[in-house]
Structure formats: C-alpha cells, structure tokens
Length: 122
Image (cartoon, rainbow, N blue to C red; front, side, top):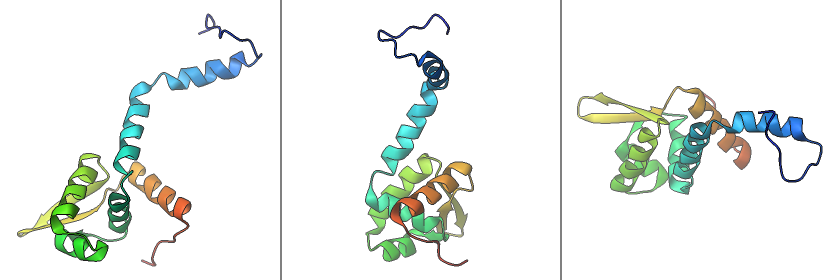
C-alpha cells in the first residue's frame, strides 16, 4: 500500500494507509449496514430489545408491544433472518428470544446507551 497517494498531501499518509487497510473488508461494512437497516424500524427495535430480556410467543409479544400478531410475525422473521433472534418450538407454540451472540449483546447495549434505558432486574 506504500504506492497509494492521495491527490492532496496533508502529511497524514500513515493514518490513511492504516484506515484503508481496515476499510478493505467491504463485506463486513455491508453486513453491518444490513443490521442497521433492519433495526431502522422502531417497532422492530422495540421487539428486539424486549426479546433481549425475555423469551415468549408471538401472541404475548404482540400484546406487550400493542401490535397485531401478523405484524409482529413479520418483524420476527426479519430479526431471525438477520441472526439477531432465535426460536424454539414447544408443542404447537414457537418461542423467540435474542440470540446469544456478540452482535446481539452489542446491539442490546447500544440501544440502551443511546436511549438511556436500563435493563430490568433479572
């Protein structure tokens, strides 16, 4: 990368080289953008935050967030496709909760820090 030169020399070439070496991982930025796009909906964000604190079925989640079951199901499908939540079947019922992944934990913390809300006591 030592052959790289910007049109204007501001004597920060070493900083640019370091940043460009990390910027080259375009797929990581695309994946992160998709997660942020998915969480760009306030209802989906609320559902995700709720599922960070409990595991429940669509009907109960719908009641907690005051939305129709089909609308909640739509949001759950998107959150699950993004790897942010998981589901398990118990008889005829599907239960949903936040994934036990670093990405989910980081997003949970980010939501709480940005909104100034605190986790309920476990």
